[in-house]
Image (cartoon, rainbow, N blue to C red; front, side, top):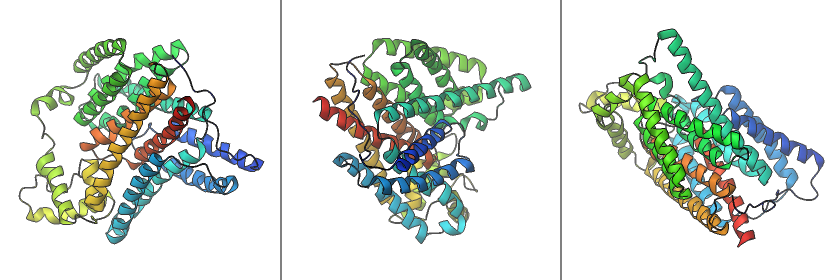
Length: 425
């Protein structure tokens, strides 16, 4: 597999820290692993999940005081963190100025403020190579849990109804998590130490693709295409390309034979605007955002619905007479916090992808042309993050929870990559 970087990344603990800090540090990391394992199981985090995040954040704050000053942060990580901080400030300010606390205060706390703690938790407590490997396997396990649960749901539906029901939302709600999880299943296929684990991972790849096709979400189809393509470009593996092509063909044929035609064939035949995106979701969202271009209206689904339903009586061109949402993560952000926040988001996604892929390339060269654990994990992160929020997010409203987890993972990976490159150059 080429050269590894065992010993390159060391913990950023101070030499004189007290024992309680060590125990608390491991307690928080254990909580992070638990949160990660259950991250993809449900479309939205449960209340208990959010409560654990808050509890860990409080413990982490105490640990940070106990550790003292941390090591210097590489400039590119500072820039990415500053971009995210700009988005956070923009959304927070817009929500205070708008009607968020009146209409969507609980959602603002649960779905925006709490997820914003995830990058800090990951940065403070994933500070060694051992912990990083544990967390990557936790992400892969989370994907396998989701795939297994989704498969069992299909089996129950088949037993109960004699086939797959035509209610598309039964599985569509898992689309973004399946796309994100796909990148970590592929990572497991490349990186697992045991051959039997790699075989299981590669067998799960076509099953995951079949499930993504079965969601009927064309945004998810594009996101999965991006994920698989990024791995192909980085690894330059002919075997991967052949296996993926065969797996995709099998997945497509199996899906077309099993799932209702409304999920795949009809959606392709009906074309781009089957859900009224131009005149029903995207168009109105853009029109409303342009009316408040600098500050937006504030965060929250109910804020969007309230404004849409108030204006639709005077908008004959708007297709839906009751709000269906923005159906686009970037447009929802522009509506909530204005175009400055949208610009920062676009810059963040581009800068993040460039930073990770550039480091992946440098690591690949340092390893004498053989991709090692850092190359594969970096590829998985950029593929999953950009595939979900940069590609699928164009077509769907997505959760800020997965965004916070993904960003935190990327920042931690860049810290490891910078240290590995400096050590081996």
